[in-house]
Length: 294
Image (cartoon, rainbow, N blue to C red; front, side, top):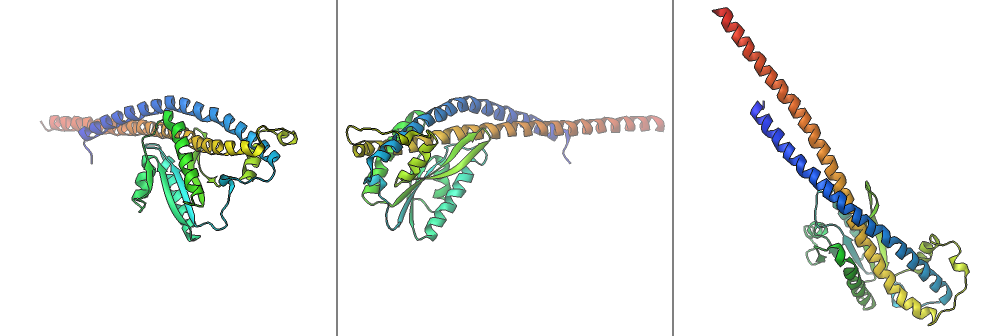
């Protein structure tokens, strides 16, 4: 049975932990506001670009572009995983890593060779321990680097895809829905699909395809410039969504940890008071018994 000193020591330890988790919650809340603004402000740009791409594609007729060329037989698949560098954010990283591992297993069952490219220390450590030591990993990215990193990644993917380095590329990330909801998402980024772009553009404007446009230069030339831009936008949005989701998950996790610490402190304080009262009662009984014996 724990002594009163042990209980006091544990109460002090839990109080220190509560201070840390409460501070981390407030820091994450401040970061969440900025991250959410970045993620949500980028969505209208992506929607407008999607609508523009839809209109150009509708007017350009039959299009042949390297980024739209689907392979007759898929043999090599590239999976890009975007997680955070730090933990203490609940199941934010673990859920995505497990879903990605299941996705890779399904690709291998279909006799596809899978290459992995990871962004974030949590995905790097997870897959390195599972035999993906030769995969490419990038860590310690900050928001100011997202745009440049997305541009570099888009260029590398385009070069590798055109050279036959892989047949399909998928990106796995947590899409930010709300403070309590971050959804693991798998999007195919290469080859791009005009049908997918058109479906996405329908949400932006119901009558956007009904108008007639004259393009200078040709629609095919414009599409050749818009497709790489669209690829960069997809990758950038994944980075922004991941950061917003990370801060939301950490704020929620630290809030739960703070509440649990407070509950534990209350329970330990009650236990301490009961033990102290029992000790006082015992001492009184011993004093009374001794007096009666005299």
